[in-house]
Image (cartoon, rainbow, N blue to C red; front, side, top):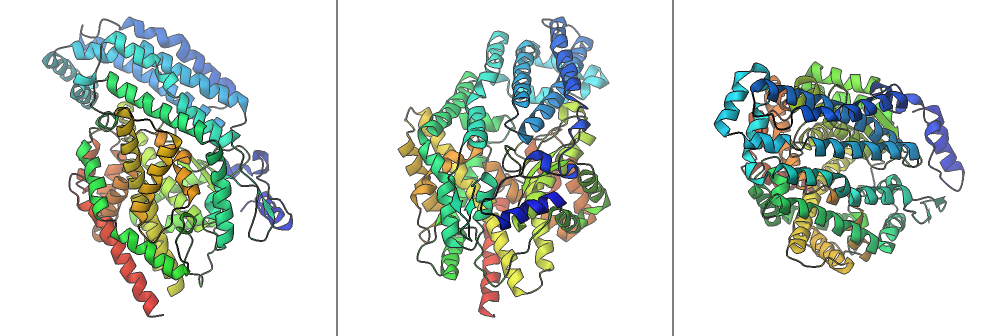
Length: 618
């Protein structure tokens, strides 16, 4: 680990107050290199001006798309050129802003690029309705008449699929103009929770004053001192409770924005609209919730076992992630050593994949440590055509950080291979597929660590880690998905979502999923207010379906070696060249079947059986 960061943690142990370092204190190799996107803010401004100046080029095509194939192709290529620039501009502004949410200049750049996106969407809004006005048979003949147009065939087929939900040109333009305004609830929530929210100071495990933060909250949930976990839990949720009316207003505003767009496009529900964008049948969502509700027993079993092993009367929400195996002293994992662990764990994927990982590690694609006003959590930036993807981390030296690294690098490699392999129109992937590669990496990492466990205590600890993965990535996300489904249904039917309604609904949901061994404390009922994914419009269910799919893919790779690896790499390279259900099927997983989802609960029972067997023999 870098010297100055070691000094920071020494400072933490030697003084009464632990401060979060400023960005300048972090060595350059642990911060992402934005010059791969633009060498300077001035270069960003040049591209911004280029897009502004060239937007009027869309006017050359308006009203002419049905003329001939050449005009249609020229419009598509011009639209692609604008899109490539916009995405590059957005990536730079987003990463610069997230590095320091207190930097007003990058907030301004981020706001400006969002406005430019909205302007571009509005001026180009004629394309979709004009294409749909062309008779289907004529349009398909136009596409087939030029080789360069054939690249766009899948996009055209997808456009025709959603024809009944497309609007006239003036209506499309109005919706495009509303795009920037529609971001207000989430933008406000994000700024409020990441930059403006102040958490109460608490005493750490040694009784020293500690500034609470997002990253420190997650770290505290793994601390073995139960009183400290409770203090951290209550401290972290206090501002969400104090500002519950504000969070309720933002939450409701986001629901109503999405409902407005769904109604405008003549969908029966917001959920139908959200899933239809990726051609995912609503039945996939319904089946997930129904099957999980029928298979909550493994989660209840784990909660009861954990309560007994911890020796407490009731399991509280701040107890669910701490280890129950106190005989194992969790190791400290530096970022540098963790890179090597991840490379070893993923060796089965072959030299091509490992070389790509090393390329990312060696060239500052990652921003590693928490700093003042840096965005909390972790993410991969996704595919930006012509630019490698970036990863944000907030490293705390926990085993959980190693899994986060593997997880985010799964996203990163998915985006990298997609951008490297697919032409611009397909150089992205459906959110339905977004969590497959990430959880696939976690599964292989856990296998590697478990196989190399030093003794039964470490083995138990890792089995417990896997149970926590199933809990957080599968069951918890389905719980969120059911909560999200219900709040949308209530809003769509005209019911008011007050703070009490939201808190009581979340409490009941939490109790149902975790079962009778858990006592839901008041603070947990405010957790809905801190979950950013509720602003992502039916995103969270895909963590669960992705987890189930990744388990099936990982099993296939371990059982069938090179042949399965080739199929998996084909999945990573497919982008959006086909519908996500079909892409997964080509990789060997049928998501129309309940089998991948049900396999997770079966595996959880198997792990619990192994865990209880080891415990009984110790």
